[in-house]
Length: 454
Image 1 (cartoon, rainbow, N blue to C red):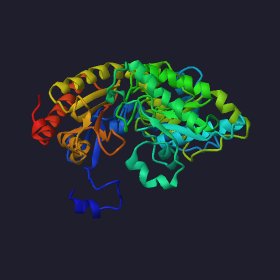
Image 2: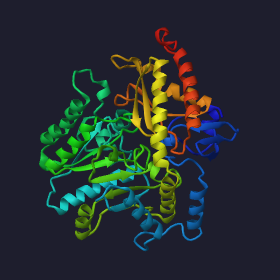
Image 3: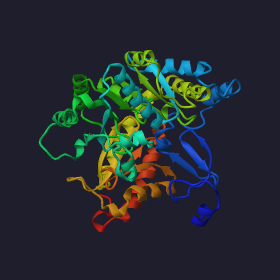
């Protein structure tokens, strides 16, 4: 399809002028366009398709629900799929996280978490608490409330005059630090930024701290030192600040645990889920919170919030089937095993390509970052648009990966490699082979000093 055809041939408009072929079908980790070309879904869409495409058992359970009812408004009926999915979700979460509220996506889930936190504060006579501290860089969604909590300038700045301007602290990107501290000490250093910001804003004004336990699109699978998580929990408890973990991308088994927070032994006050939670089979998200937060809100007149499709029975039937697949097929354990293998092979590419500066992540939430100088981690020149170019080369080869700009949105280039949790060892090798070819082609487009693999 030519650009002219893309611009004038249809009524649907997209986020940019970058036409793609029409999707024909999906099977497992593969997608096929209408010409028959096969693509490896090396990023699970937008880190969504955790159990792969066209799973017959999930589709059968969705069909069974469709034969009964596709919609039942929650103010009129309870539904078994929503009640059963809530119970299954709680069974997979740490003890104490025992109440669930459903939504249709990640931005809605973030907004729901913040609204629950605010309404809880009101029930406790803490009406001055409204500020939510988050991190820079970070990504929490595209609705205004979630966007105000996002630390990614290209997406946020055009709308900044229309938002409150919630406070931020620096994300713990310790791999960029050039100091003599241990990783444990660096983790504590970045955690103390939260204490400083709470004091600066006034503890009586701070409602919550929102963070991705393992980074998503804006930081490329960033993992902080273990010390960071423990200290963050301690600081929140000290000041009565609610800790909200945005697990939209990292949850539902992607990191080798149902929740990424389980790797660090820290339980947040509210968990936000979406993406892999519904795995692309239906729009679905949720917040999970303890009864100690939910019951006072219900006692005070109810949760002043909701969406038309919250708890939709068809979406919840799909979500329940997805979680059953995770358990019955051992996909969370497979994410841990295949994640270790894939990460080792990505790290191995650093020997061939000196412009790969860092590989990071857990399970099958992995990323690598390109740089001009590995010693200083100086980013590639922004005008190279490496974050776009490598994606396009890989796409031409039949490998789909996901990229963003690492350093706040305007420079730095990272790439998420996050295949579905059903990926096999042979398919990991296939992904690495295509990525190696893409990197070799990309290398020839760099300056002569970087043009040849080491």
